Amino acid sequence: MWSNALLVFILLCLICIAWFKEKSKRKTQLPPGPSPLPLIGNILQIRPDKLLVTLQKFQEKYGSTFTVYFGSRPVVILCGYDVVKEALIDRKDVFSARGKMPMVEYVLKGYGITASNGERWKQMRRFVLTTLRNFGMGKRSIEERIQEEAHFLVEEFRKAKGEPFDPTFFLSCAVSNIICSIVFGRRFNYNDKHFLSLLSYINGIIRIMNSAWGLVLYNFERLIRYIPGPPQQGVQYLCELKAFVNKMVEESLKTLDPQSPRHFIDCFLIKMQQDKEIVDSEFHIDNLVASTVNLFIAGTETVSSTLRYGLLILLKYPEIQGKRMCPGESLARMELFLFFTTLLQKFTLTSPVPPEDLSLAPDVSSAGHFPRFYKMSAIPRT
Image 1 (cartoon, one colour):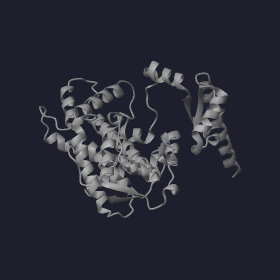
Image 2 (cartoon, helix red, strand yellow; image 1 turned 90 degrees about the horizontal axis):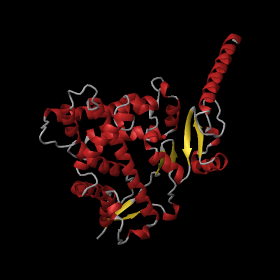
Image 3 (cartoon, rainbow, N blue to C red; image 1 turned 45 degrees about the vertical axis):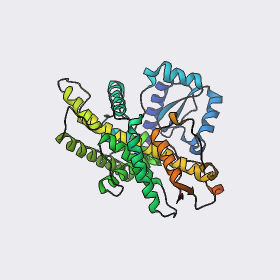
Image 4 (cartoon, one colour; image 1 turned 180 degrees about the horizontal axis):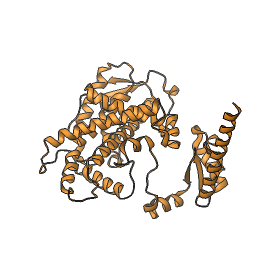
């Protein structure tokens, strides 16, 4: 028994010695900051619900650039316009890399957009942006697709017959279908079992990344394959989503016409054929599948969460639902603007609880701030 305790003690001492050596090596390369503890870093000094306040206190003590340890990982915090401009604009080539996303990197092997860096990221980003623009993203040519999807969204709201419901699922369906129309060249019915599986995978991945497990995986990425429970479930969701995209790629390949691309996957497949003689080409199946998965996860969650938060504001302040002018229409995301205006033209939105009891405070997680879940009623306008 004593020998086991001694062994554990020696092991802990070795871990602490190794950690302090690594910390002292980094210390000369990183800005100053609060002293971290082994393994957990500065987590005990940071309140997730008051993260901004905590960082502002650190700024007062350490200046506009300082280092905070989230677990064992150092994070450099930039405060103020001048410092941020210098990093993101004046020295963008140095600071343009993305942070670690262990679960995504584990499944997608560093391919795609969100988990890649360097030349691969530049090529994928350039191709994806160009292709999305060619298919109308951000242009008037996509307006018809969004208006069509808004019609289906209105019909789903009507089915509630004025009873309270959670709009999260319907908003996710609508937003995801816009992505489907560009990536796959088609939309799915809201009760399509394959489409529902796609959304369940995305929601499951986001839910796990937003939980405390997201922070655990961020700090102990090498253990991801060994940790049971939610981490393995998240990996399974990503694998299922990857398999879904692979199936759609195979179907597109069977009917591919190089002279007439129908959607994003076709364009990528054509580019693969054009670059097949290039030995180190980044245009291959792995990058196609990973980039498509990235588009779905990022595109669905960001826009649908914005829509949810916007509707929550309308419920909190119902007096703003009347006729309004929108001088900033040209600056708004088209899908957000059209979904909002269509819903407001068709329905009066109400909350089953008094507006003063609704909270606009977001849920704070390891991945950011997200609107709280709520219920609403959609009363058809006469």
